[in-house]
Amino acid sequence: MAYRSTSPSSYTFSVPGFTRAVKVLIIATSAVFLLQYVDRSLNFQLKGWFALYPQLVLRGYIWQLASYLFLHASPSHLFWNMFALWMFGVWVEEELGAKRLYQLYFVSGIGGGLVDTLAHAWLLPNTFSYTIGASGAVFGILLAVGVLFPDRPVFLLLPPVQIKAKWLVLGYGVLEFLFTLHGGGADGVAHFAHLGGMLFAFLFLRMRTPQFRLTAGYERWRRRKMQKRFEVYMNQRDRRPPPGGWKH
Image (cartoon, rainbow, N blue to C red; front, side):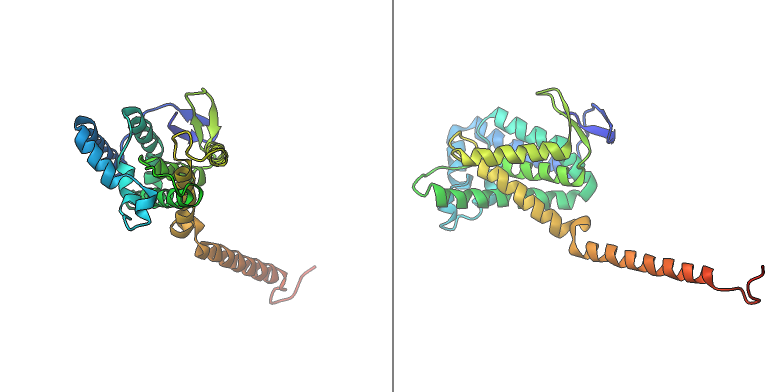
C-alpha cells in the first residue's frame, strides 16, 4: 500500500517514518512474539493466560480483552498487522497525537475483543476457542483513517490500484460483515473482532475527536447565527440615509 499523498488527486509512493506511539506498539508486540517463537512451552503458557478465551472472559479473566492484542500465531500474522499499523497508524498519530493513538488502539482492540466474546457466547456457546492478534485494534486504526482522511488516496499493491481511503474502509467493513454472516470465525479469522474494532473506533472518534463532538456542532450553529446577524446589521446600515439625507 502506498503511504503519502499531497493532494486528493495525487500520491507519492514513499516509506513512512515511525512516530512515537506506533514505534512503541510495534516493538512491544514484536518482543512478545519473539518470546512466543523462541520457547514453545512459554508460548503455550502465554496463550493459556493471555489469549482471548470468551468463556474465561465471562468468568472474570477480563485482562484477556487487552492482552490478546500482543499475541500472534505466526510471523506472517505479526508482519501484516504491524505493517498495517505502521502504514496507517502514522497518519492517525500525526493527526491526533500519541496519547489519542494509544487510546484509539486499545479502545478498538478491547472493543473488538468484547464483541468477539459476546458473539461467541451467543452464537457458539459450546465452542472452546481463543482469539489472538492485533487485528481488532488495526481495523480501528483503519476506520480512523477513513473518517479523518476520507479522500486521501491509498495505493494497493494487490491489486495494484489507487482508491480513496473512505472506499477502502467501506469495502473492508462490508467484507467483514459478509464473513460474519457465513460462519463468523469458521475460516480461522476473528471477523467479529474486526467489526468490533471498527465500531468502537467510530464511537471513540465521535466522543473524543473535536470535529465529531456535539459541542462542535453547536459552535458551528452559533457562528452561523452570529454571521447572519452581522450580515443583517450591515445591510440595515447600508440602507440608512446619510445625516444630510439622500442627494439626487
